[in-house]
Length: 320
Image (cartoon, rainbow, N blue to C red; front, top):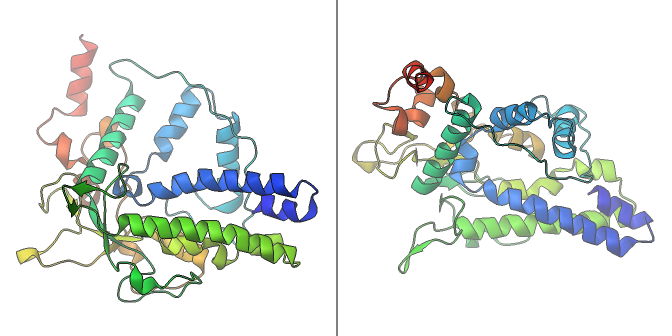
């Protein structure tokens, strides 16, 4: 939106609009991740931060910009972090990729954590889950989206990172996911041009950047899920919000970032119980052993069961 604001004033208006679209394209790439259960359920922030520190890359362009975003906008980098009372959304400046050495070795704990988190990501994505957003479900919120929402499915099934329209023969495996993702693309891109028109008419860019209308696309992303499993077998163990007896559907549970989404949109959804939010799975069990927390144990179930404890694995490797 900052590039859009500059485009109103500058002679290089066309160039700045193209830059704004360039950044929008990068943002949309991240937006698609929010439709994948593996990305929603896995928190890799600490692991990535540790890798940056190990490689002395914390002051490189991207980590510096990312840290500045958290510092000026949110109370914490965690998914449950709150929006500050007076956030200052930072413009995207020049961002470079950081050159990092891969941390190797049989007892590299950070590699273990990264591996576990990668497996969480893969397994949740492969198993899929039922999802619902703020524009669907029994108590839909009103948004400015011009399309008739009745033409979009109320609930949908989400798979991860592969084809957003996944088929097995002629049977659709993830009905609704592609349609809602497309709606999110449209809403996000439309808000960019709507913002330009508003600024061109004298609107305040800072106020516009905090207007709920800019975040209309957040109403399209999955904010509640059920039957979230670490494998394709429908078992209560290793699943969050699994179906009840006789296949009776259970209540959807909010995702970990649901509270932040509601805050950004400035709406109150009392039926979404943030206290019952799904966990953010991490690779902590790779270094600390199995969790005693039943919520997080489901994250570890699929590969920790029956394996030696971490202390035993470390002793074995030390003797190699």
